[in-house]
Amino acid sequence: MESVKNYINRLNSFWSGQTKKQKTIYIGSFLLIALVIGISSYFAGRTTLVPLYSNLSPTETGTIKQSLDSKGIQSEIADGGTTIKVPEDQADSLKVELAAEACLNQEISIILFLVKMLALERPIKNLE
Image (cartoon, rainbow, N blue to C red; front, side, top):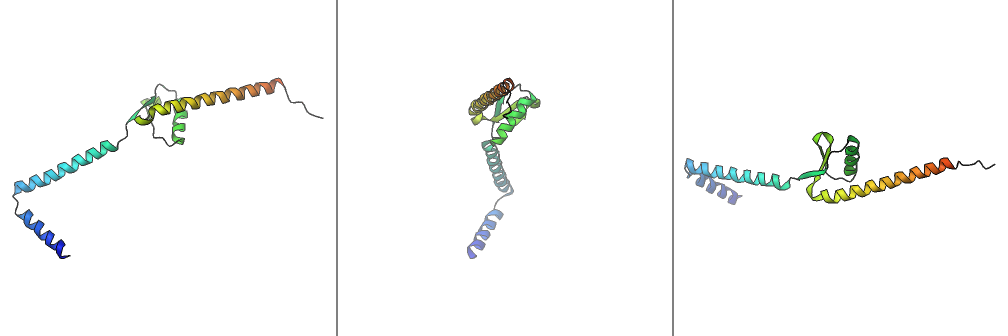
């Protein structure tokens, strides 16, 4: 506790020995450094979003947004709902993943359609 009091006394003695101009320089320098650190932290931690797809219909936008949300991927709808933006470092892989999902969904839809058509052509006969 004595060393803390000793340190505070030395700091007060130093501060009172400074001119008004020196005090202004110290405070200004501290604020400038704090501002530079704050701005740097903001830009370093910010995620850059880039367009994944543009010129989408509302249905397409909703489907893609739902898929991204279910995967926990940060996304943003822009341009009145016609563009979806994602983090820049994930954009390329997401295009491939979503294209593969779309192909799989189309294949499943085609299979279901064919099964329904076959069922209509050959009605199930009652076994009596």
